[in-house]
Length: 123
Image (cartoon, rainbow, N blue to C red; front, side, top):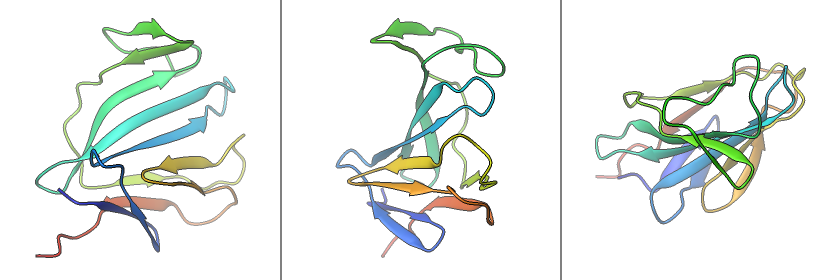
């Protein structure tokens, strides 16, 4: 399992669990959205949990969603992916906040999409 993730030219350490969170404000509903991802043993990204602060246009909780501490939380049934591509339009209400061992903001201003992928294995 990789201990870091590449975000464009940045290399970010993951949490001890090998996971990271990605949070942003939904562009239409202006509600917070948060996803928890982990790096799998075959160096892919697996979405393990999604959560939204509200519901509305394109942000309804998924099957099995439950309300916890002000968030609708559920476990998406999606296969792992090799990378995530985050738009960087500069016109959304927030940047993407990526948190592993530390947090950083991505895509706050207009530019090329930011690609997130596991760091290549060292061995």
